[in-house]
Length: 200
Image 1 (cartoon, one colour):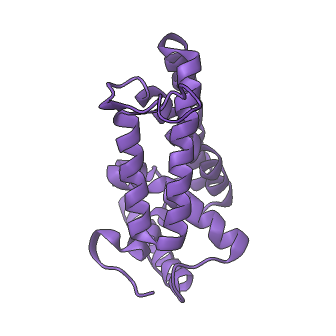
Image 2: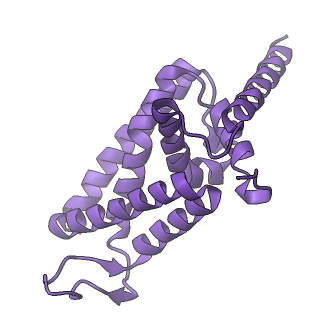
């Protein structure tokens, strides 16, 4: 598989993300909290207007699924991830839709009056953890301050890809990991040099 260019240049995007997540503890914190942020967002999106109610399809009765903003939010993420990398992207897409289904079931049972409180508590907890990871361990501001799309759209996939690399040695194509590491090292060096110049 060849390296992709432009918006789907996974190597460049992953190197950008990696430059903000090089500390092992910060990486661990993000691994724990990024997907729960995605999941709880879908709980809230469940209560957006539905374009088409599919809850009665099939013989099992109502299952709470509807084509609302949460579905299209999930679809955008899933398509984007598959375009990045077919294997890891397909796994990420499946996780996205699993989150959507799970969030729909939970939302239907909680109701909006309780769901928004659960989402607020979970989001505050997860985001606080990530900011602590950056401030205390990484000692660098999070990527969302430099690239909002990168932080929100790509973070769940990059967390998964990082786990696949470390646990299974997965690479989207040969040489990917080495190339990304070189770019991360160069970017971190540039950041440290700029930080040193500003302090002198």
